[in-house]
Length: 383
Image (cartoon, rainbow, N blue to C red; front, side, top):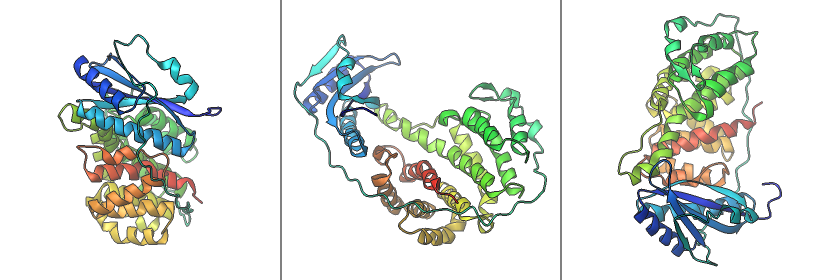
């Protein structure tokens, strides 16, 4: 966005047919969009594009404003059997280049501008350091027995056959190996590439837990593994929210993306052994354990008092806000979880307020998504 004078953009939606496309185009134009086009989508149905001329300031408030306009437009799309499907942001000078002049359906309202809903943005609480000390690591072997019993060649990751996963897991367990590079290849490139899960993802996760519980890894490396477990656990809720609007339009329940449910279950199966380490872990690791406990309240209740105490310790800080959310989720208190999640979304610039409005998804899933997506940002200050 460097060099932008002001921001504009587009909001895109999908409806089943041309009749609904025309009706939605007219409704969006009447709502205040100066230009709305529609054309058949390669994926089926019709794609509607509402051109939002703005201008919006090129800052956090500007993004919140155009997002709020998009959510209001999405509500109109739902009334016409449609659902949102992305959009774009650009400098105001670039918007005329996206006009889609030959679209078969064009609705205009020259000079109009859609109303901007009220925006509530609060000052973020301060970050707080999360310690990685005291720490102990022992010179003990890591048990990887059973690794070769898994038919990895029959499984897949982002780049094809998963037959290289045992080698990567063994490299990760080598105290003299290149930890960061191996971990990034194993999860960033292969097993959780761009947030997707694969058939090989779930079978690999128990070996991370073994590395953690072995006592052989220092706190920083244990924290890295806990973080990847939290990321893996969050893919299920993320995919449900991504499918929510489409599911409502198609009169069905949201469906999780491929393999995300098995991955979520795999993390849950490891959690009792990991949560039992609370007393021996430093605060940075306890923070991630509290977040995992919030995603799996049936396991996490055993830590409810400890999470409450930690939330009090970090009161009025960014980690403290996520600990309050984890506490509410552990207690299955939907009202408190909703409030805690909304408070975080009001100041965390990377969160989409639309997450909390998703239809067909429980409060626990929506608030858990806020927890899983945002907690890692609160780990930015680790000492």
